[in-house]
Amino acid sequence: MATKQSPRTPTQPADLNAPFFDLREVAWLMKCSVDTVRREIAAGRLPCSQRTKGSKIRVSRADLDAYHEATRLVVLPPRRATRKPARAAA
Image 1 (tube, rainbow, N blue to C red):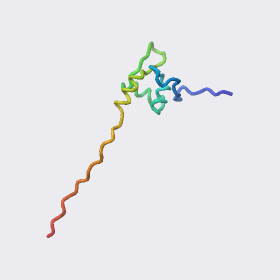
Image 2: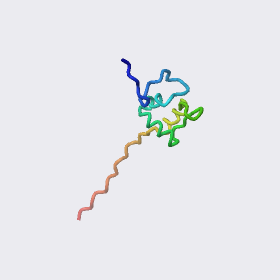
Image 3: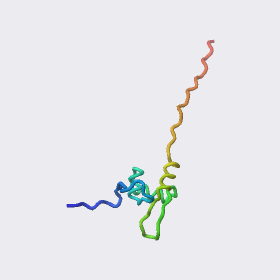
Image 4: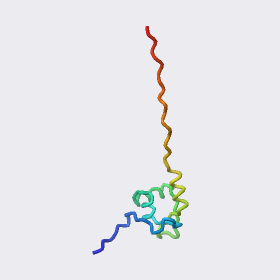
């Protein structure tokens, strides 16, 4: 018996080079939940496309790439420890 998959379950896109992705595919690409994708869109950090109210929300490949570039973590070089000068003997 086939089970119905939840609409919040991330799914792998059929074509990774597609120009647009739906929310479940974006969640799979970002390795997060669909709710996280919705929060990022609501906060304005991830642009989306939507034809009419109530239709499927789509995110373009260009917007997804720009989001990844803007939120990417940069590894800083290690700080050099500064030594305090030795205390003068009394």
